[in-house]
Image (cartoon, rainbow, N blue to C red; front, side, top):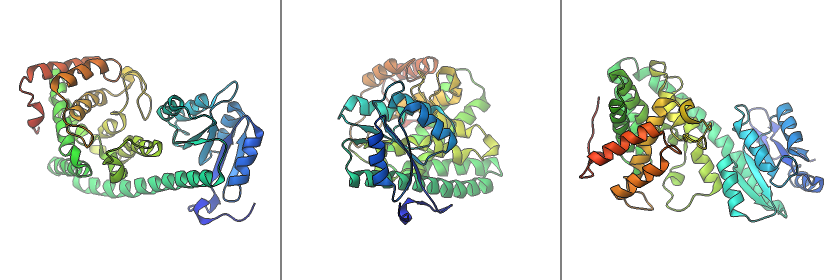
Amino acid sequence: MGESTDKSMDKSTDKKSLILTVDDDPINNMILDAILGHDYEVISAVNGEKAIELIKERRPDLVLLDINMPVMNGFQVLEHIKQDKEWKDIPVIMLTAEVDQEKEVKGIQLGAFDFLHKPFIPTLILIHVQRTLELMALQKRMQERIDNQIKATISQLASTKRLFKQMVFALAKTIDAKDPYTNGHSQRVADYSREISYRAGKSKNYQRNIFYMALLHDIGKIGVSGQVLNKPDKLTPSEYSSIKVHPIIGSAILSSVHEMEELQEGARSHHERYDGTGYPDGLVGKAIPEKARIIAVADVYDAMTSKRSYRDVLPQSVVREELVKAKGTQLDPVFTDIMLQMIDEDVEYRMREQEVVP
């Protein structure tokens, strides 16, 4: 193998990025090694079990994973990777000889970063691998930079309750400013979350805390490209993957706010689903933090009652029907029932126009 190009190097260690190829056909692994071996360090496995062993021994920077393998197929390997706390951030590109939309959707839902089709085209392989590694490196640098900046800001402003409140509102406005179609979204989700918790009989302190948690639930979107957030068309797999990172970014940003340590729960867990198919952690039912379950209901309601680049505000009857469908699958049934009650009381469909600050 020749010398590595700069784009394949880990800048912090000056080592080649490590790529794991997994295919039950050794020839395919050899082809990938021939394509990538000049610029990257490549290791290979011919089955899922061996792939997991290699990941345990040497955590790769990227995995190229065949779908159709005996004993343990690619989806099972992908699921294993994404359920492991140490491995879940490893990007995985799925390899397939078929153009199968259902399989690609399943792969993305399980956490695949991208798809490549056989027979392999060397130039495409190199472009996809380089783009994936560069994006992951960019996200890491961006997260570190944003994390440091906001931690410093939070540390300075959170010395008093008054300044803390100002800081939270300022950050919420910063988040909403990235997308003109979500202007005021954080405020409304905070209002709805507070009202749901009030109707659920929660304490005033609980209501105050969930208000601030909801205001900052989308803070991780600071680390997502505005072009992706505002895109009116269907997102590509890699764009969707970059959006799915925002709960993790948000949790990391808020984890150092010791004045209200549970702030990060709302940021991390508001896209978890009650049936366990959400992200980033795949939590099920009451394993999802309670305040995050309330915020999720409020978030879904506001998304449907707000104008988007691709649709207008949904009629109240449609919003209600969708919430009923989501009850017990996507959303906590108890808190969904409370929101349904709020909708039924809102005869003139004006709830989103109200604003209450604790």
